[in-house]
Length: 575
Image 1: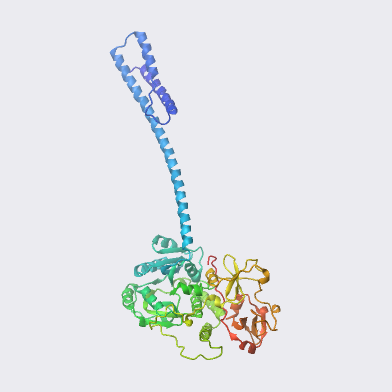
Image 2 (image 1 turned 45 degrees about the vertical axis):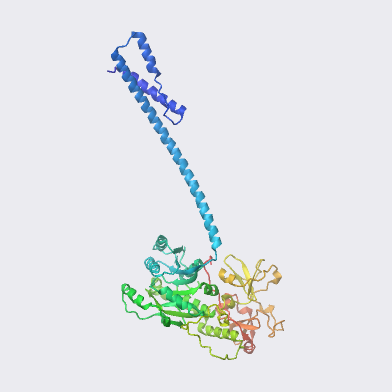
């Protein structure tokens, strides 16, 4: 049995052992495997007691051995505890080092991946894939666009990509689209740019050989894309194809037997059996669903973003398609379901009426009489291809070819298929700029870059980069003396004979008949080119102080050239 003195001794031994253990840990580092407990106090006491008594009873020896064993176990426990703390500390340090190393490796991997992505993006810039880019602009219509995308994924076997352009929706549309993944690419804009702005952003992103612009409140059906593609390929003069539907304006709307969407699918499956006899030429295609080629986009350009929210921007773009020389067609064997103007109806009746009225006024101011303009441009095109002078009737049948005839003239050199570019309708001598601020002058059908500061008094008109790149490049201008002003001031021109001009007006002069001052012309290549509206003239910086009054007889004696139209307004700095 242990005495109080023994207990006190054990306590002292325990404290000493703890101190010694800590000292050992400090000396030896983190390892506790080779630590030997220091119990020299036991030995000293045992020796002194032997000296006093001379001998130790067996009972006392046993008690002392037990006490020594207990002290040793206590000391070892303390050492093991200290060792475990050292190991935990070591592990924490090791984990911290591993975490830091992992973060460093992650950053290195991220940087390598980013640089590789940039390299691949640069190397693939401008490349297209042999498929279709389907552009869907949307605003606060998450459920509709999810249904639309699902229908595309289910009923479109051809190669495609889906580009959803979200106009700063507040209903989680962008997040829902990002979660879908797959062939869906998402552009989440930070503000509502309207239908035209949303479509333009998608056109900028599109990589397909062909492009579809599609409303978010539609459901595509089996065979829809194949039948539209067949229609587009049936005649090289067809530029844009649209389907038929249950709800739309114009001749694309057809009677349908169903009342509920669930009943629509069986109707569409029957209706969409391929039938070229259902393909027909039309005068107008509504922008709820368009199919066209990348080549047409490069000739016609982006939609005009001067139209607020929506309405009339599709009519505007179609006018430009027809001015470029293309025809429009309806694929009557391609039916898609249209819920009908969901985004516009969300404005409310009053706001919708205001938007519609403002856009209609803008459309009229920009184009005047667009149907007469298209007819006149088509007549000029036929004269140029036939060589018939202005004012003389053409001979022969000019009836448009029926697109249902399966002709094989793709890639032919037929001069009638020499489509125009947007820049063919821009004024000679005007100044153009891109979003970066580079400035060019349009001279003789070529763009010449100004490698000098823009002279005072010249305000370049911003156009899209693809429009600029489509213009053949000419020699850059490096001297201010080579730059002529625009628009030409009346004091800069004169009515005496000019070299190379038999009419007495300098190249680039702005003229108008005395009795029709609002109809303005530019003299270009000994031809009179009419600005299609006052808005078009002002868009190019031409105002009343630039106009020279002439007689109507003088104007009518000149041949007529391509009309001059206003370039589309582009509010997106990325275009």
